[in-house]
Image (tube, rainbow, N blue to C red):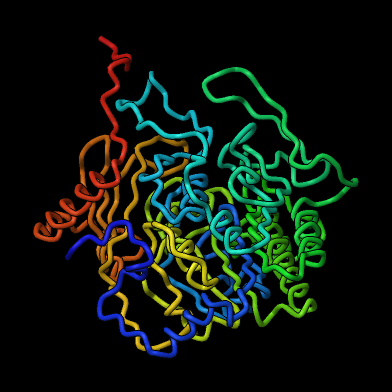
Length: 485
């Protein structure tokens, strides 16, 4: 199979046997010529939300009626992945459509988990901010006449030159260099140790507020105000990356009550975490209610996803193996939902095409009649629109490269390829391989590498070729490691 590589408008979908109807072609042409109104876009990204943390994903514990309603009205991808098992690389992939390895932004920021006295390998080099040279969703949409708003977590760099306003957003509410709020209650302050030093820094997510105010509610108020006071002559792009459900685990007391009543053995996560998820669900409901009351329901595309799998101390990711920070399925498989009037294709049980964070970028560009940019993603718009007969290649490979250490359970430096049902993991410290058949073994319990030498060899070569193509940063031996005589 040939490697499609980075693609542009001339090959936006990465699939074989593509047959678009004349209706789809005329629809797209009408949009580019201005005959169709450009849809608004709302992109929700929840921090650390696990694949099993929604009712529509199978949870009987977490209460998510508003998100479930989105899933019922749109397309839910059941084989969706984050581009990394930690947050910053996935956020970069969502906003640029490029793999973290290609961006050289492969670790959460500012990182600092590598230990020269412990780890046998030096981790790969990585950037500590999103490069200004990259074209983001916000920049592409603003060029197409959109108002662009960022509300929530940024975590892709900081002052003086890598905040949301430097990457195409007209408005930035609460976006900064840090990835957690310190406290979800006013005054939203926290203290962090700077990696590899004993120096601490105090940060505040929002400069003002009221006693008892909850951060997610405050951010939702800001998002609603932007919608209600928008320039009605322009479509808008609302990027709403929540700080929830990242640690510290702090939920509102009133929401926690119902989860305390659930027997401990039946809880999927602690009551505080469950309340945090419910706060996100209420926020999604409030934003969608505002859109409907504003008369925008029929022209707003909504995307909902997470930046990585659920945190080990917060939720049970079963039947998936492991958790955030690990590149087993529990650390990278995430919810992905597209909803809105342009989403005509619906599968009640979900759509099982493997997809990844990079796909969001070209799909939004196509759905908004915005000229396509280079990306590693696959345009899913034809699936969403239901136009024509479209056959996507289920064997199109997905890739991960994480040449780093972190302190999450089951984590290791790895490179990965998933192609069809097969997932190959290369462990960068040892050079060992694990091969899993995800159709039969979603929990990754049976390593089939020794039993399938031909599959192993083909995937090893394809993974190596991809790493060469994107110039993936290597790990090297740690010559400074202290070894006892």
